[in-house]
Image (cartoon, rainbow, N blue to C red; front, side, top):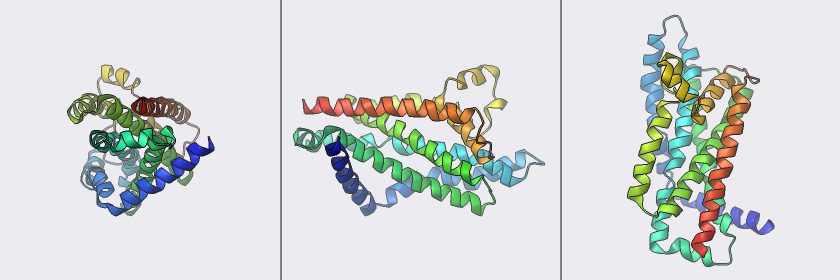
Length: 252
């Protein structure tokens, strides 16, 4: 275990230095949520007369943060496929370094970038007038990080299993869009037909968004909070375990 921690810290430092050399890519990752905040949130506020824009932002911003957690981490595996193809990852896997550390260093890097991106979205929301509960906001950033860990582990697991960009892209498009539409990030899912509301209950991201809205309102004891933390923690453990196991298989 000490070797895993030591090597994870080494890989984390290496990956962070690589990200610092190309800071433009993490910024591109939040461009779409930023545009939604600037162009869609004011439109949504006009559709709810009588509700202050600040309250609309408190309902809208958690969905944007979950969108970053999902899409910001779901595509990190493409870089790993390139390393598999060039043989870089295989050489690392057969070296004396800890195999889990190769994946864990990357996933921790992804979580750190997500938290920075989340803080930028929150700053924009504050400038636009949003005033969330501070303890709720801190808890939600933690939930967002766990959600990103789940998506990152899934992406690395798929990359190691498929080793093909086209197949990975098709699978992601097949599942990511329905998942995000059934979260109610743009409009509350309560406006949807009954059948969509029933299906949404089986979507873990829906519960994460609902928990975010409760936390931003300061309802820290809302039932959606422990439910979403539990669901995302279990899913994150499963996907990270899968990617670590796949890395061990790569080493043979």
